[in-house]
Amino acid sequence: MKISQFLILTVSLITSAADAIVIRHDVSDESYYAVPSDFPPLATLYSIGVHGTLIDPEWVVTAAHAVFCMNPGQKINVGNEIVSISNRYAHPKYELGRENDIALIKLSSPVTHIKPAELYDDNFEKGKVAWFIGVGGTGTGQNGQTISYKENNGRLRKAQNKIIRVTDTDIVFNFEKGSKGEVLEGVSGNGDSGGPAYIREGDKYVLLGVSSRTDSWFYDVGEYGVTELYTRVSSYRDWIQQVISAKDDLARENITTQNPFLQDNMKSKNMDELCASIEVQ
Figure 1 (cartoon, helix red, strand yellow):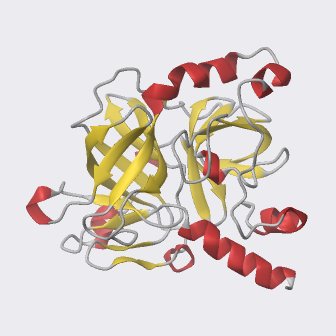
Figure 2 (tube, one colour):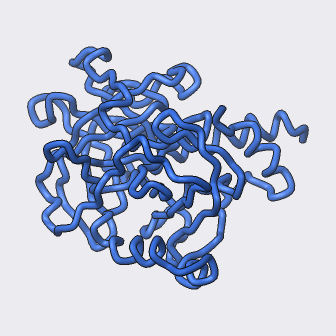
Figure 3 (cartoon, one colour):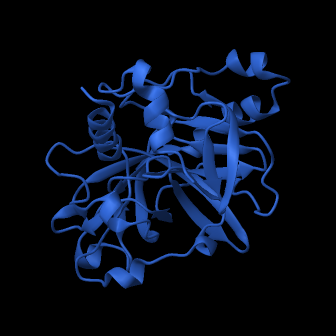
């Protein structure tokens, strides 16, 4: 297979496993439009989307399944600043498609013009209305995602959703229709895995979850009724702090994994070209 064909197929798979913002059918698309100041600590990992959140001047938290190209020297966008990666550290118990879907990216230099998001430090997420934000594909709950990340062309959207339950590892959302949903009810589609579920407290942005996966047998991506899981940040606060405060890379590697978690159609011999093709500019 030619590299160009490989890249097309791989990017297609990447975005189909990721998340973006799908909206209500009875509210205008423009009502969901967002600007960077709606969530300044947002990080974008690839030109196709996929996100993370700045939680320290030198650290971004994202989903473990999103780090396949987060190699030293790879560039990402944090608050409209292009920065290089120093290293990546994923949770040691993560397996593709499962819980513990969380990873940390160390930046090669600090981002100082943006205030990092704070990590939620309590256990009362259930019932809170959180915000999502991202630039991936979109559509409405009636038909699910119908507009790809490429067709969306980088349009940033935000949406609301209520946390219906929590587990030890995840916070859970459901895409409700009509009066059962929030005014700007929405869920994730394709293109923003690793993105935030957050709340605003005064001038602080508080991170509750990291976009991970869907958990619905009978609904397609973005359809009304679909259930979405975000990694529960409060359950990983201690691990996050251990990684950030570790004295050196060796100490970090002892409590993390360097696994890039390649999808089935990713071949290691082609990854350099894939990563170069989707690097942010």
